[in-house]
Image (cartoon, rainbow, N blue to C red; front, side):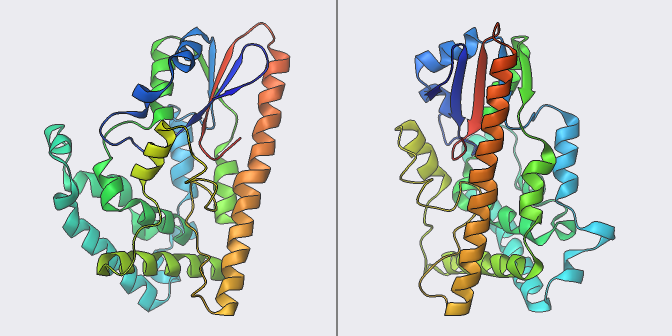
Length: 290
């Protein structure tokens, strides 16, 4: 929780769906009070706006009606399909009794996360693969904190808004060149294939993120990795030319998704505060930003 100028409260909103008890239950009372007292609540994106959701969906799609099978090397596509077939097979075993009790089905969950995957750009498929782990699957079904706050703000008739546009979140990811994207997807698949084989342990999980967030210590998770949104491809076992590619991707994501983004969001927050000195604001941004 970061205190801003008079009438402004900043709050880091963990994105992943909480495990068991919602993150909101662990939010300090003074932050909850600030949320209730505010007249306006601002997020990175307005997740209650249908245009935002459709914009996020369309920016992930390959252009000109292409399919992944058309653009990926044959063996990489086969490995991806094999991994997704494995995920679909394992989903019923990963789901919790609580999820089943709420009426969630394995096919529904798979389609909610991976539906239309053959039409998506490879970089978004890479991120999708990273969200298809047992720990993340078991956490599905509880709203992420910022969506929960958006729904609460709407229910309480507060003014809501966003400091980012959809294209500002999409363009940096779509800005990687094709060879970088292929490298990233290949490394991601290698990691998950090793996890399946039991020869690798996940560097950190959604559960770790929730635990560290609740304990007030995100440094242990967030700032030892590229960002909270993308995997870390740098490791000492890569050959030198691949280490260069991994470093380029890491630097690009840091620059685009952390430094430039924080500066842009910070300027917009300050402009809102300067232009509305008579209003009280609550800002809920993802952990790892601002």
